[in-house]
Image (tube, rainbow, N blue to C red):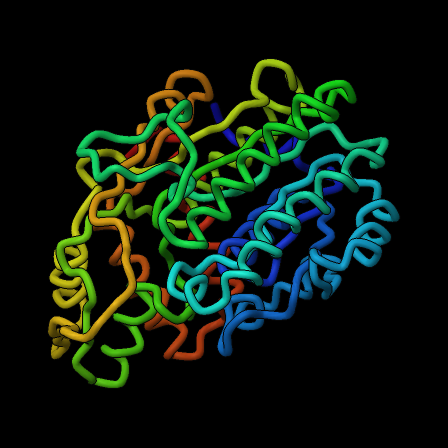
Length: 357
């Protein structure tokens, strides 16, 4: 299954969270496909940000607002009359959720309720892709991957809020959305990494900040294992799924995992060693301070997306880490980052077309 440029050309896409890391990459990709995009989000979450460095505001109709503001969100969405809705806006950080649990639940749970409630009145809407997280599953530190039918849960407020969001999506799908003949799917990606992420308390941005400043990085959980993947990997799955939902809502309105191949599920210290090879003079040490709980092992079973959507990962973790370092060095060299991003997306789409990994 390929991403059909003819399908996306001229489609009206309402994208929440367009100023964030993943949302900015999605904005770039949709723009490259010729879609008509309206973004709705808070302002960029970091400075610098991919939204600003890649000039996303020049590519989309950008509306700055909070998804908790029902009336403002409703006017923006209903006035636009979208064909497809991609809901990415979220409070995305585990450690932040410990300090701001109420905000985390308000944004990730009630924000989802607001989006889906307003979607019911969008008469031209045919397809909804709602992004949650791989952390929505009740984590029992199993070695095997979590499947789409496993129980929702979450130890920390962030993970729990994403499990709650999944329950909201399921209830709205069965109670309202399927009667409207709109496709509604939830998607759970792994640990998404790539150029242009400056968020706090994320491994790759923390590594790059430390390396750039020639400081020793303190690492909390070096043996923690995560399903690392380049940001374009799950985004390709979201786009393919949105197409399928548009054409056959009954068949594809489910939950879907988008993660890496098993060989690319690596520990934090493995990532550090590989990044250090690409950035001479770098170093890291164990953070021996008190840190909140985080899951030790997390894997996703992606066999369903592979067999039923025809989706699969294309870029290895080695290639992904090199891409990130090259992207960051291009930024340090003050290159045109919109052009750099477009080039990376075009390379990825070429690899998809040529069936190369």
